[in-house]
Amino acid sequence: MSSPLSVHQRLFSAWKQRWGSSGASLVLPQSWGVTGWPCVFAAGKKHQIDLPVVHEEDLDEQFVRGSGPGGQATNKTSNCVVLRHVPTGIVVKCHQTRSVDLNRKRTREILREKLEVAYKGEESELMKMKKESIQRKQEKRKKVNENMEKKRRFKEMLYSDQEGDKC
Image (cartoon, rainbow, N blue to C red; front, side, top):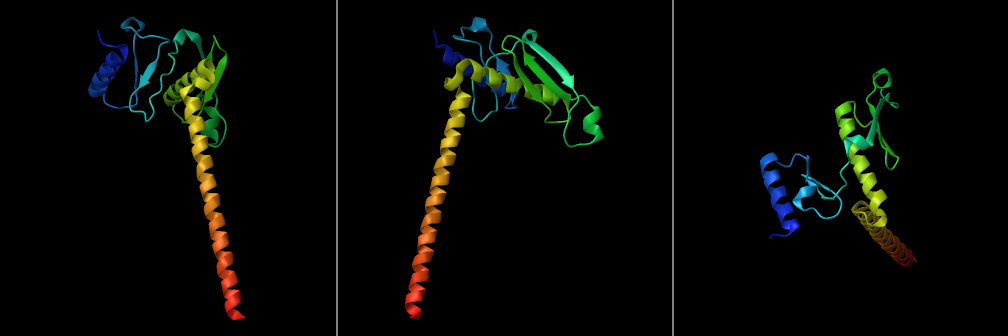
C-alpha cells in the first residue's frame, strides 16, 4: 500500500494535467485516508499551503455597499462581501474589485488563511512565511546600511585626501 502523501501527489498531478494550473482548488474527501484535518491543495500557487476546508453551512454571507474612491458607481452597488465564520466568529470583508464573484472568492481565500492562523497559531505556514519575509527584509536593510556606511567613509577619505593635496 502506498503512503497517503504519494497518493495525494499522484492525484494532484493527474488533476493538474487535466485542468491545468488555473489557480483552482482541489478538495480531497475524508474517505481517501487523509490524516488530520481536511485540507485544500491550491493549484498554480507559488507556495502550496494546506488550508482548512470551509463548509458553506458554517458561513454567514452579506453583501453591503462599498466605500472609498470610485464615486457613485462604488457607493450605489452592493459588491462588498462580508463573510462571517459562525463557529469561530471570524469576520472577513472584501471590496477589492467591482465584481461580486471575485470578491466572494477572495473573501473565502482570506477566511481560510485566517482560520489556519487561528487554529495553528505560530505553527501556521503563513506565519512562518511572514517571519521569513520579515527576516529577509531586516537582513537586506542591514546590508544596505553597511554599504551606506562604507560609501560615507570612502567619501570622507577622498575629501581628507583632497584637503591634504591642496595644502
